Amino acid sequence: MDEKANYTKNKAFDKQYYLDLIVKHIKIHNSATRKEIDDLLWNKLPEWMNDRQRKNRITNLVTELRKMNTIENIGADKNSKWVSVL
Image 1 (cartoon, rainbow, N blue to C red):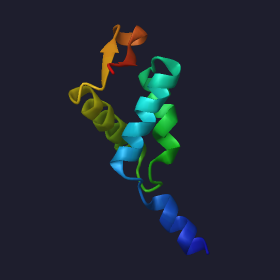
Image 2 (cartoon, one colour; image 1 turned 135 degrees about the vertical axis):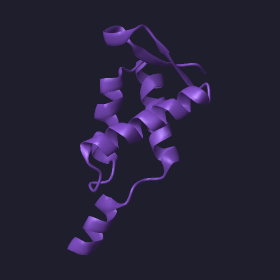
Image 3 (cartoon, rainbow, N blue to C red; image 1 turned 45 degrees about the horizontal axis):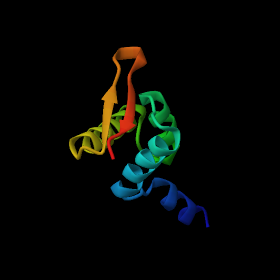
Image 4 (cartoon, one colour; image 1 turned 120 degrees about the vertical axis):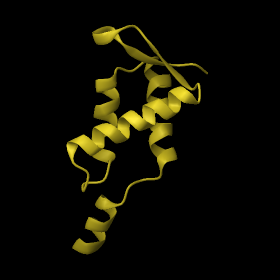
């Protein structure tokens, strides 16, 4: 049983799951800071990832959504927020 649980903890969800989660969060709350997105995804990423890898993965997901014109960043620095374009 432990092996099955560990396998599941270490297996990442597919990328679309994370993208959908970010978009859903932003639509429900009208916006999200980067910290909120980090908090949302951090524990859902595989356990084998270290902090740097997790941060990079989240950055890549947010960048992908931005390039797809699904979300955009408004504000600057500490007041920066991600909002839905759709």
